[in-house]
Image (cartoon, rainbow, N blue to C red; front, side):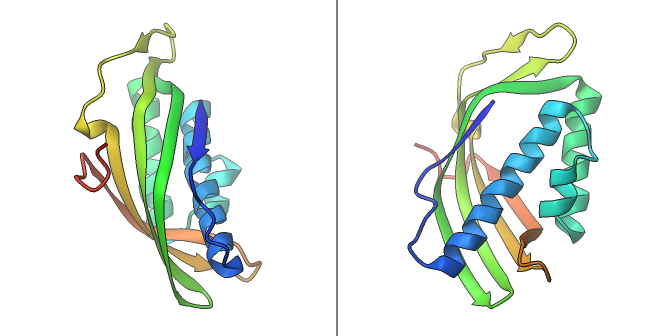
Length: 150
């Protein structure tokens, strides 16, 4: 599995730090799915509060279904707003047209054709902890979002 982040730098150090941790959070949840574990260090490092609860439930759904995935997910069109020194909003799109579900037991890959649902819009809130890490504290995702479909 490969995560590709396109244009995730703004040239503003504060915004770029928040974007980098937002990207790491996305990679952390993907890592948990790949490992089939809800207690990976990355989840609790990059997610807190409601977002951690939601992320653990999401990973558990994959585990319960006996699935992981393979391929490449492209993350693009990031937008960031710093609310103050310790909170921010980040939205971005994901293109999952080259990412495929994979059965953990048989290793069979489901290469169903891509659709509008292969594109996802994420809206997240980040808060900087005492160590300076931007943690995702809440968020939503919308599959088939018109703003992301290409």
